[in-house]
Length: 558
Image 1: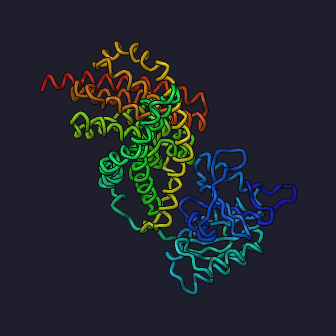
Image 2: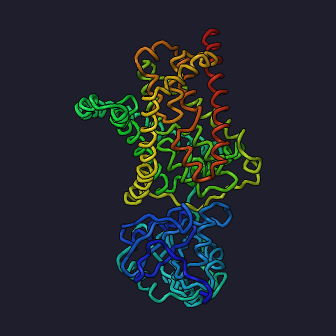
Image 3: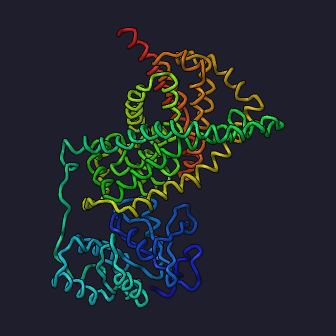
């Protein structure tokens, strides 16, 4: 490394443990490899001066830093930051894929030339492990001037792990900008049903709908079991609080207090978050994510979304916060559209759980089917109308690796990915949830919510809704579980099926919840968040008017 370059200062890296930056493409096995080398005990820390997290592993001898995957053709924030960090890194572990060895080396050697590095060749189990293949690796190591070690990242034997760590003690300086020795092989994954022109998009859509159906069934089942238990546990604790002075009484045990609304978080939200986290993690670990993205890209590009973006929108059904954060690897031209689609159409665990409760209270659980159909269609139209022209251009090529092998997901990888999503929910969403509960309780105690509901009551007639549907719409703009007010006795029973649907859409879509809005402002800026909120409010009113009056007209005709 040039003498005038200061090594990258990784956060909290022990002074006695030099840092090693792992770099490579997405889906190359880099994360699995670093977990194997680091023993699985990771800490999540931010890149210097950014909000983008990286995982670090302290082996005692080295601090291994797992940089985000690099897609050279992408203008994503994570790719840019990884490239910047690469230039300042003191020591590198370059991870390339054995099945596309020549291609990966030609792409990455210009980036790492002049750096001290070790090269790990993953997916070696996909290459026939015989004398000629080993000879290529040996000749490549001599020509590059750096150790080249083949490995199966999904199962790293102790001797291979030790060889990699030992090699980092004496890394070589990369001396070439292209592969000096050609492997000569290129191994492509087998075509699956997802690559079929007509069947592929259908199957990919079913795979995406699967988690939604599973979450609905799981939420209903878990809520039916947990709700009585939670009420039994929290009931005795709430009774003494009723004698406390206001507003402390209201903050803790009022209609929107911690003791009142907090249990709903664990009854409806947490199970949905966990289900989605596990399913999406399994999709990623198995390679299904890339295949689904490839199958759906031709259908999504005309509305301004990318094939790789669709699973991030799906993540929002678990929790919008990690879903918005996960858009960092998205292309710069499609990330705003993806974030908007998450805020508008991803019915987060609060919203989805509360919606199910409202339909159940109305005795119309079957409304979940038209609800999801309308929600998907409305989201696609919204994305099309709000996306920039460049995102919808045929030149918006699919930036995804066409070489992802399908494999049985390793339980360790699934748990690692899912626990990261749940951790984001706990660390980012729960603190804001607590703050919003406090604010809502104080507003209710001061009478501000009732005053706003009375003022907006007449406006509800415009949407063919009763006046008492105003308060749920107001509260759901702050917290999506405000939808539950529609399920109160005497409210939902007085509405028709069409009115119930319209009320749910108005309350659920009018504004992103405050947690989501604050996350978007932090990720993309306050100006973007404000514009997104205004667009979403207008779109939500159009959708509600269409459902309310169009549905009523259809019922009259029928």
